[in-house]
Image (cartoon, rainbow, N blue to C red; front, side):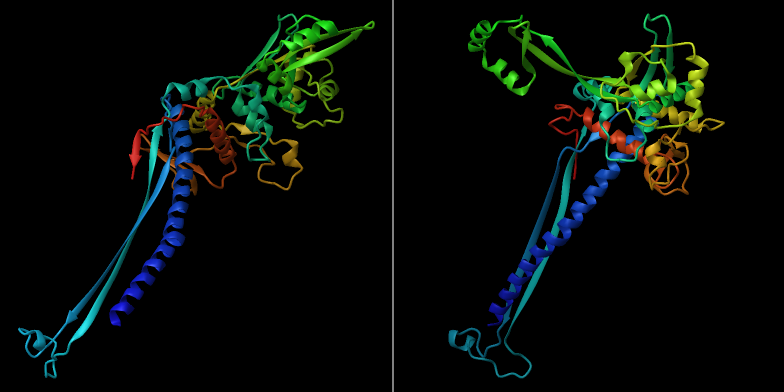
Length: 432
């Protein structure tokens, strides 16, 4: 009876152990993993900004797979002590001894051990698939990607994405060129030009270019042509990438196939541009979907000063904007870090836009640094901290800069650079 009771207890311990392992240990392990990966990603971004400031090669790692494992061992034993009158004979063995000090008995023992952990793979992104996407100029469509920070000013995004602004006269004789380099002596002029464009609603607009791929056909000719269409052409017509256009000119009906190609351009609001700067911008610089009641987003005299100083005698200027690659964004932030840590120190300031000025979010209603990296400062509460060449570099969790927003946006850009094939199938390092 006692043995049966011990076995019942062992089974209950196994069941309870499994339950505790599932609900407790593995849950804690998963939470710990999420925190480690988050910190791993943030530190990796900061480390490469520091590398860029030192003109050193950038290097990125990724964690493509994580495997959790667990094991549980249960031990149970039963022991019996028998005291008999004559242990050497069969009958005597089962006859109890007449002694007051010794008595037969049964004892049991139970034990259980639980082990759990996870194994993750660490892969290097130093390969051609990743680097080709990482070093390629970003498409204009990236300007429309808002990220997860809904109150991020446009000046933050544009400062990260835009490499160069050119305002070109129709004949090409006059070019106003502004380089987005914090170390350049005329960097302030770029900021003024950017503010001017933001003030008149600079944004990316998607457009469609229709190119004829067949000559005009009569109804009879088109019916004969349609019977010979292959499956690929029919699929493209269904998807809308190829369009059948019907035209009626003087009673003559014709059909023609056009290929539709989507592309994006940088443009400004027509009504805001004409109201603020008359004929300074060319018609081709205006967005096709300009809103008539679009208000000026910024009201800073620096933008108007740039127009008065360099553009008062110009008109019909076309906008030409060159975006960076993701790699160049790190180079730019490395330069931001350099000018900040030089003597005298200088921050690259971001000016708030009207959506911040009119909101409840008070943190950035005044000009604030784009990025602030602290060197060997142990008094801050960091969201990221790395050691590089004997120095500790940190980003604060609660200062007056846009640093956290910049890190969040960089994380998005890095993810978009991880095209298929950029993360190796076989890991570089296996960590247990």
